[in-house]
Image 1 (cartoon, rainbow, N blue to C red):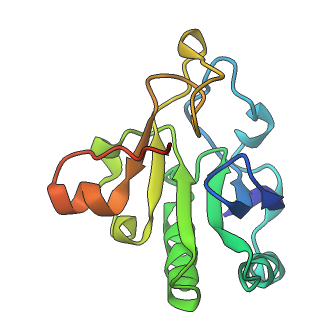
Image 2 (cartoon, rainbow, N blue to C red):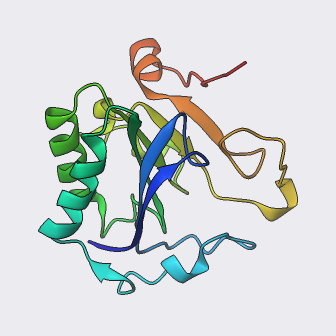
Length: 164
């Protein structure tokens, strides 16, 4: 896996203060994408032990709510194995931290990935510029869904996450 950045104290990509891992590689090519530099699967830096430790040091902080995986697309087929391994390690080490993940894939095509039960919230679906709405919370276009993963798996149907 490769990545472009690790953002600290982020409030724009999930609930609370978060650390964000910007993964390299995306095959969706959404028109108007905020991060086209992250599309190249060979771009950015190799995700290594130092990068992992940087994330873990942030997650040790009480005021950090959790981690958000973005990109690029963390669920690009090339990334899935390493992202899944990292999610497992994070959940095992920091069980009270939340895990959010942005992907251009829709829930129905990724729900059976074995690490899905460890994720708290998934924002699914490609960004569609014509459906852009700056009033939307946590997503860029109205076709995307902010999915409560735990309740979705329990109810066996998509349950959306809402805030006041």
